[in-house]
Amino acid sequence: MPEIKADQTLDCKGLACPMPIVRTKKAMDQLQAGQVIEVQATDKGSIADIQGWAKNTGHQYLGTVQEGDLLKHYLRKSTAAEVKEPKKFPHTISNEELKKKLASGEKVKVLDVREPAEYAFNRIPGAKSIPLGELESRMGELTPEDEIHVVCRTGNRSDMACRLLAEKGFKHVKNVEQGMSEWTGPVEQNHEKMEADPL
Image 1 (cartoon, helix red, strand yellow):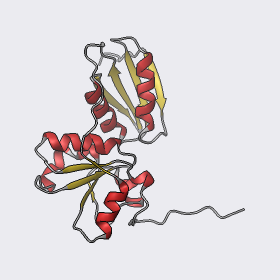
Image 2: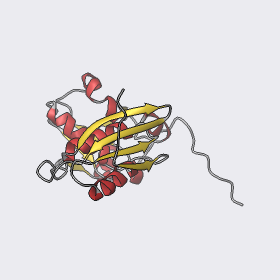
Image 3: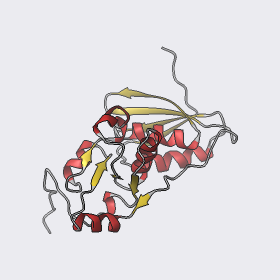
Image 4: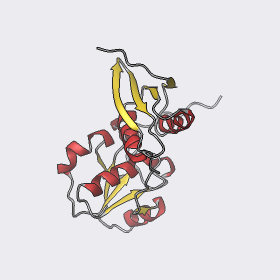
């Protein structure tokens, strides 16, 4: 197998969404068109994040090599003519609006596109878990006519998920903008988060 050569290596090991994307965007801004960057990450969710970000901006996602727990993502910086501004999904709902809908007893369908471990520790009651990387292959579990509220940690992965669903004919999709990082409504969890004892 030919060796994969990169012009720059970016260390994102141990970082969770959205930091690998934030760092990749900054590093990509410094590259010349046509140059290749190797992004090293350990977050499995980074595969879908990097692919979605590249598709959204026009940069070229070349592929990912996995070595144990280490993921090496390869991206090529596109020319100015190839790059496009990231599009935001136009239909959104705030955490507060969603919280009111849940409190009123309205039947609300919530799709959580975070990784299973994130979902296990902290989720909106009744939310369905389909990680972003599995969404395309598991769309049959969803009903295109339903109003679906899509949530992740900060609103980035859910934005990509909303665009993917809309492309596949889902007409009533909304991105929950602030996401679980700022959710103050009711939650379910498999495991209690351990608090450190005060010294």
